[in-house]
Length: 394
Image 1 (cartoon, one colour):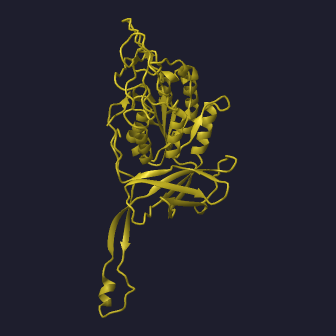
Image 2 (cartoon, helix red, strand yellow; image 1 turned 60 degrees about the vertical axis):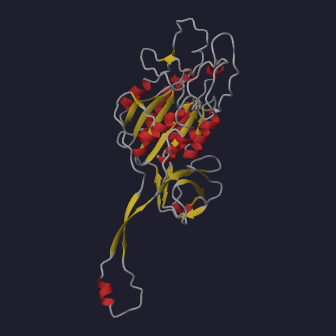
Image 3 (cartoon, helix red, strand yellow; image 1 turned 180 degrees about the horizontal axis):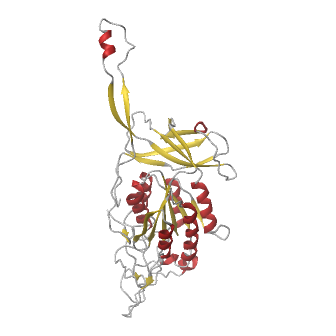
């Protein structure tokens, strides 16, 4: 079990139970049986009160027409819901245009992102200023590179969020004083680095703990928050050294009912600066510390294939009900934030009590939510985990 490093507080966050609804059902004795001599006794018999636990699955959805424009005037009867291919009845339905929102901003501050941090910081300032309403919403800010730090816990104060954004910075390379020519420190995300003047340094792990950041934000912060929840991830999508796998990170976000909006922001110049001779983690992270394999000298080793950050971030967003974006000359980070803001203010909240026909609650259940009208596409999470507990580090 890993824990987030708290910059502002060291308190542990308490776990919460899975979301459920306790309903009191009055079960009266049946009066449809044939009349007998003891009918008077039956009429006087008190009704039985039975308390049962009902699992309600809540789904947030965004609907778009064939032109990509958001549709926000649909009703409950305009949707069909199924779980694992079995039709479900929609019991709860609201349009989430003005209800409270919990936001988490996760910013990749590894060395591969150092040249785009200023743009990310500026755009994030405007986004949080627009999204976080002092009387309704809350937000927190996390940065991740070779460690995961909570720069600002949940708050609705813009001044605190602005202060946390100002603390976003990349680690600095560690100067080699021993004449070591092994090549350590030349990779942008190598672990042999330190933050300028901060003294915070971790010798274990890799240089970009993307999976761990999503896992910790979901498990330690989002899980206990009610209502609508969303994570915004700014990264190139390449994980190095996380203890948690991508599968565990995604499953934890799903269990916390949290959508992940991914913004791919690559610095191609930084990526091209890499040299051969460095090992990487696997395509889903967890590769441990990077470094030269073997001793010093002039030997060079082939570099393993770089993971596809775009595919990784796309998968995270699709499976959690968020959306993937990529910063480009045609679409700036400010424009992307504007789209996310519009989407988060125009969602449908749909709830149902699963009818599984005797199937087990535990395990993963696939959700199929569609609009009855033609040419409408529905964006929502692909499924959820019922009953069973996700194992950390698996």
